[in-house]
Image (cartoon, rainbow, N blue to C red; front, side):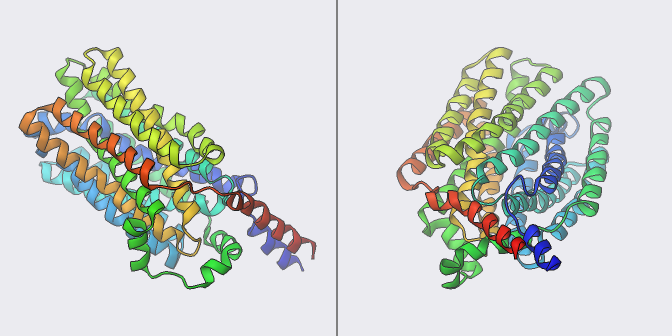
Length: 435
């Protein structure tokens, strides 16, 4: 009897029922995001000043390497999480991250920086993907948007804090090695929390799948079928995937070109660090509201309008000539991204069956994070050919077009049935406890 009751309790879904583990995963993802923030302010200036890279495509090569390795690892992380469990993948990602700060501190050539970013991409693919999957497992269907908003808030607010901190340290002590000391601390704390305190969540996905036994029982799709559904065949999943790709395409452009654009406008290191932080900070904070909002109003139009707000924000940055104008444009880009980012993940959770959801998340994140590489390459080529402003206008146009694709092709993914699933699951758990 006691074992049955304990099993029932362990399978309860929802933020309240799993508050301790969910909160711990939010903290862990903050350290994951902080690792990316190490680079957002200072790596483009390091490329130009320490390694004398003039071509924008060469400067942005570190983002291309990061994007490709992270994208491929996202796909692998989803499959590994379904097969072996979430926690082991999370811990493995932190182990891969351990050499990154040291490589960035002491890199004797740009090739070493690229190697560090390959490792960073693998680490981010394993750790961030897994924290997303684990939170979806714990939260259940009724508060999935809020769960993703909290996850992405923690990650991107930490990106902003780390970018601000590295810009502050660089302004006082130099570009290397001091700013990267922070990364050593991030790795140590993130690894310890993940290895010692985080618990496996795959059993929660199994509990949720009981509610979907009829559609799931018709046959779990193969990995190849999941890939093509998420990429092209399913109107909702593929609309989400293309929006994610374009979202990170403009983020890759912002990561690589914004510091150079601000520097060309005679901003100093502290101003550039502040501007590099405004975008992810706004993005992070606004996600607290956007994710929960999508649970109430739906996913489709929040995604489409968010892409359009992003395009407008990029346009404001291009047209601005002052620090205040740059802040406004960066904040708009952050608000638009916040409307989109957690909502895309929540929509994947709405559509994908729990038995293959982690794999679908992996495919989505494969395409989404290839956007980093595509955006950096596109922005670099256009910037080298016709200038920074033209590259930014190109990305703004693509972002606006992506919103149109969502508006025309995607259907709303929230139904009354999904809103009631969490109550049904927890009701089943309560019945088990009463036996």
